[in-house]
Image (cartoon, rainbow, N blue to C red; front, side, top):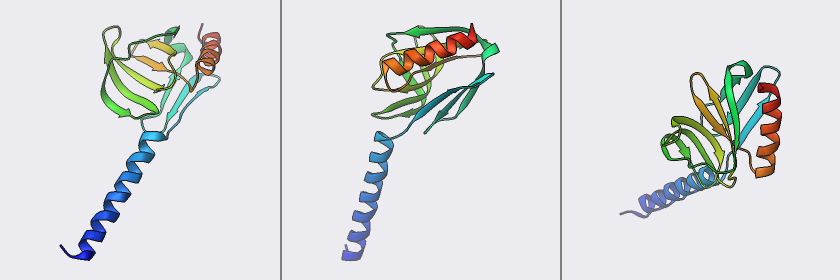
Length: 134
């Protein structure tokens, strides 16, 4: 193999490694509670809006078996996308891996589970959303 080809392969491999490392360690989930909607903006998955009037039930969970990802994105930092577990069946998850508390939003059409970077931030968001939903 020529030196030029070998150099190109090393450069390509290094670029792929950098991209993978960035994807595995970055990303944000921003949940905004507006006047009529909850807006979820995720770095590597589809954004979602949910009207408060569509939420049938909202619960705060200190534990949750998230189950298995059936589509979406997973990294050291985030779990986003379609998941399936024994409790909900198919549902959508927007979660930080470092946080073990969750907010479950049950609508007529789907179940959406979210959290924030910390347990405290998740609890605060739950209280804010519950006030608007109930």
